[in-house]
Length: 192
Image 1 (cartoon, rainbow, N blue to C red):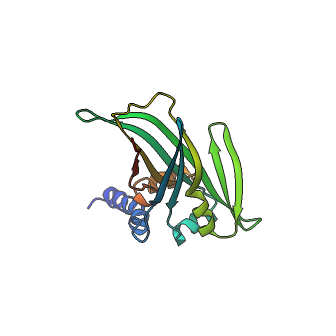
Image 2 (cartoon, rainbow, N blue to C red; image 1 turned 90 degrees about the vertical axis):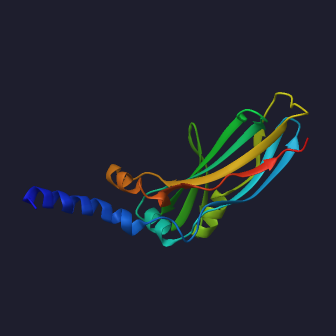
Image 3 (cartoon, rainbow, N blue to C red; image 1 turned 30 degrees about the vertical axis):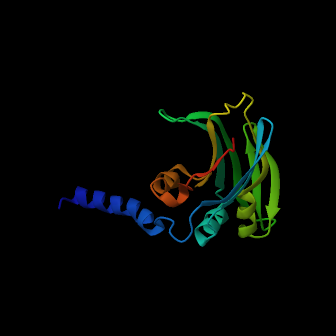
């Protein structure tokens, strides 16, 4: 081999090694454990509990100063018999989890379009991730009258990805499913 190709091969191996070591998330996966819907007129109040992995990889990332972004997405679809389903409402709830080394607490912040709002602190990662995946009375509004002959379905999906990190590290972790993965959709059909 030519000397230039050997250097390129070593550089390529150095870039791919962290991806092979990180590997996919196999021990625990994200899951929407429960979904309950209360119908109050044109507002559907969602009660959701999603579970997230609580392993050493997340602890290490948080200890290094990065955040873990948690997302809950809720949709309302009108089921079509002979055509694609019609998406009526699409909501996303974003939360950011970080580690505060000074207070020795995990900090969970609600992220709104205008920036962070509500903030909670937890002594353990398990408590913080349980709170990140739990939402009660989350309003999903649909003001149009419902068609009595149609079938409506609410679906919820949870996801997580690593937050603020260097561009180099983000490029390396982009290919690993562990730091950017989602649960399966959990759905609930509205009674007619």
